[in-house]
Length: 269
Image (cartoon, rainbow, N blue to C red; front, side, top):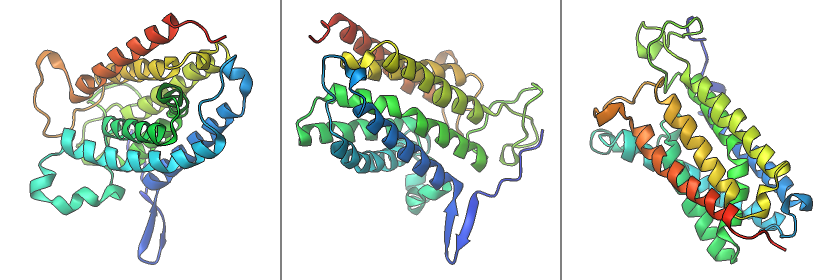
């Protein structure tokens, strides 16, 4: 199957170009924001405890998170996957609209932004992390769709019937791993977190939802690294590991600890 002839630019407005890549990030952030506000406004999800943030605080937090995503995602991409860019073409580091964002870098950027915001507003960090984690799959869904439209981060060669020939990846048909990630990191992980928050009351115990997100994303990412083509210039890691696997392993371990901690703590009265 030939890769669809997507134009990465939706529309040109004079010298400015509105790209699908940017719109995907905007859509993910806006939907995540409204979903987080919805969690705050539903007291039944919190049991005997109170939401750690107000709606106005969530509104302010979105700006902090946006900067965390952009700065962390780009810095992480350069640091983890394309450090040669610093020496060969340093100005391209700032060309975020051309693609090249690292989830793990963006994740660290968001963690820093949320931590600073929690300290600034004197609110519980883990409870705030639960809200952010529950809303994050929206960004993952649209971000991976943007990767597909850009024809980047393709999968390994395969002969499955739905394999796609990406023009920039040569003549071999490949896994559309971006769509796998959109479905699993986005839709599937959202459903898991939704069930945890709306059916099993995980927002009542701080840190549990954040831990579930970390474990869920980490396992999904490690699994899909087996069908995702490693980035150009990556070294041959031992045991068939990839950079994505290595960066996701601490997420799984941290998430497991957070879940254990949240289930061990007594339920709020």
